[in-house]
Image 1 (tube, rainbow, N blue to C red):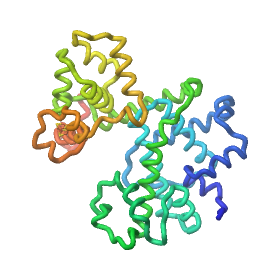
Image 2 (cartoon, protein in one colour):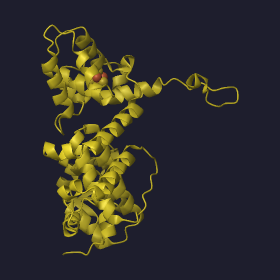
Image 3 (cartoon, rainbow, N blue to C red):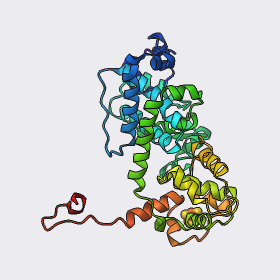
Image 4 (cartoon, rainbow, N blue to C red):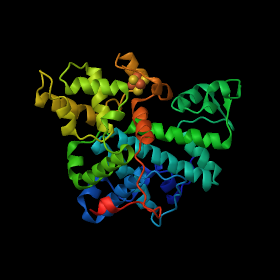
Length: 349
Ligand code: SF4
């Protein structure tokens, strides 16, 4: 059954296919947006959307903008811009943001049951009242860590898993996130990204700034044992397997090391060739969904590069989590002066 969607509905849930019809009906296309300087506002709005996505705000609130069409277009253009930089961290940031945003609107303002049902249908989430077939449930929840979503902890009857209203929305949030992760980066012709280069550069710097904020300065002493071993091997010119090079490169890139520094890490090897290494490093860090992510501990173990595992490793399942935890635990306290204010003296010098 076709339901009538208002522009504001599509601004709340811009991943619905009807947004494409609205954009086409108004005569907009990527070519017309790139080719007309007056349409720059849409690209600026897409950059703002990505910038907003990189701000980690607890209890974030979204309000309706005065221009729902701008919201709709900025969603599509943000996907394009983040696809041009092909940065996995940027993509997962945007995916999480869009999922949170839709979840927020569903939870706080959505009164339209027909629209709710439509969204679930569109995202291939077959609901029968308050339940879902367990096969689909398993697929959707496989990326969720919470015990409450484990099948053994669910009410199951006749192949159906029962869900509360909030749980349905939480599954929808996860579905949106993973769907975007699967869809991005979009396969775009280089000429498109070239025409958007000014905005792509801004997005690149926003994502790079976020890495620095998230991980701070690169501190080798906080590396997990496996990465420490790989790093030591690389800087002393020892042989690294492909999976070792891959894990080290993705790790260093994610924590904010730039490409030149990563390449120079490998420069002591007897077989070092700057062109080959540069190609390999650039290839790894610019890959899409299959290439960018630093492997988890389980994958590191499978490849035989989980070396030097220690007690702290028991609390994590990913080398990046180890590093983050270590950085947090060893954060230097900010100096305060006698009145309890942060000491600005050093910065002033
Ligand atoms: S458990 Fe994980 S973090 Fe620890 S050494 Fe192995 S791969 Fe690295």
